[in-house]
Image (cartoon, rainbow, N blue to C red; front, side, top):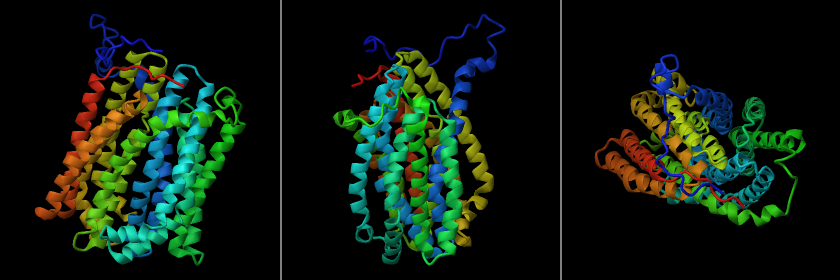
Length: 469
């Protein structure tokens, strides 16, 4: 157990001896170089892995989008619906392992990692069944939400073929957290890049060389996700390095399902509340004049922001913080957070500059329609602002997951997005006729308030490890 007297007054950065001229170089006052090096080496493989897994479904949307405007609108709406009701939820459920496996590994309770992994997989499969049933009713639900009938029908066809991939995605996310908590990174890159490479060939063949056409795009995503799952699970079961952390299949995992759920549900809610805010913008865009173009535009912005967030997520503040708290090193955990925040600013700057100068090239990956590309260029300045804020709050969200503060983060996300951000978005878009730009300005307001709320939680909560079962 951790020391109950550990207080939030521990400074975020270690003290630096200003009297030492040799060691007191200016960059050491700005950044803990040792921690920065550790995080960069940790983050690069995770950034690649996160972007690759996100790209599998995104590539399918791109291939479908080149079949026509209706196909683009249907695929983007389906991908948004799949994200908001399925993929985001699965990612959130796996967030419990960032706390449990991360702190368990830091505390050297190695065997418990494999047990928690199995209990998390049980939870993911159970929820995947429920979500699959929901997905079968996609068309009437989207029509009830006032979406265009043709776009809704096209989206329902697309999402039907994503159902097998949902199960694989949930299990893959659990294995990723299990490996990430042990700082096992490079295998993740190989087992994600290989399926993506295969996916490019599979989706091209199914869309262009078979009668499946549009249906081939989501089916290819499902196939590629299952390939990734087989590779990752085989690695965990067969590799000798997991002798301590993978005890084999155990009935004990069922006993820990409830303990896992106590963190998994708020973790999922925490992630979904943010994802839902983004996807709500896509639904609101469908209520505007020229809905096909507006829906595609907002969906492109959401996908772009998601990719940028994957880069920040790769810094894995949750893993570093949970490992250090598990080892009862709150000072090192706070140092890790401070370094992560500074690195996130640098990474966000790189993304912002690249998008500022290459937005037309990026938009062309989604569509050949000139009007959509031109409108994407006009909304890019607002997109750059939201990416910058999102990268900052992404680190604070990771700290919350690593520290077991998911419940507080849920309330922060609920208030800032749904009592502030979304009402402002609706007001600006429909009342003041700013349309797509108004939606995104409202999102920026929500993100700004969210970042502020999470920062207050981080500053005033005690940094202690949780009690592991």
